[in-house]
Length: 258
Image (cartoon, rainbow, N blue to C red; front, side):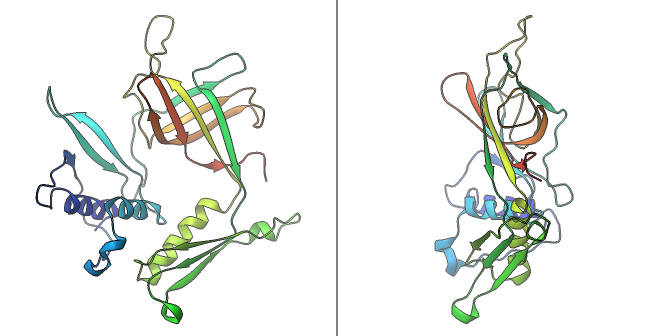
């Protein structure tokens, strides 16, 4: 099946497939054909959860973005639509690119912070089994350690006792390495859903942007980054009972480090 087809089947089995387990979620990709296979054994039930399985399907190399998007089923009821990228295009589609700005004298993106982290050159991954019979592999990219001014070697480890196929374990290690092989940064900020233009038109009303969509962030005068437009995807939205919405964007290459 496709990865999102597997995710839909898992989600359906964990909700509608259980007695009294109905939830208002449309698992729209059930049965979608593809080139992937996953096995979840009943004897390993203590290590399995729907959220954990969906996260692992998304985190593997080539794994799709996933989200639950609410919509009005009728005048009184809200349902959730499970949306995910395909095996060919892992990103969720959108009809326009959103734009936010943080400037010296204002802007619609406020309270901006930027986190930085160095690269990882090696990922040690372990899977099913114990002792000498345990599956292990290593992902490696030493290019930053071999340049004229080398970076110090930095390693990390990843483990999943449910992974019993070496190719799948290698895909997990490769996915983690691809996400961390160069110095990266992550931008966070907040917007206000009630902000409006001079004519009263709302700037960013609720429902105008969703996690997984591309956003261009224009920074001007931010102390630790060069002025410019930074393109990223919206990873997470969070809020409370006010009009403030906190935004977390995908990690991106750090422009300050070569």
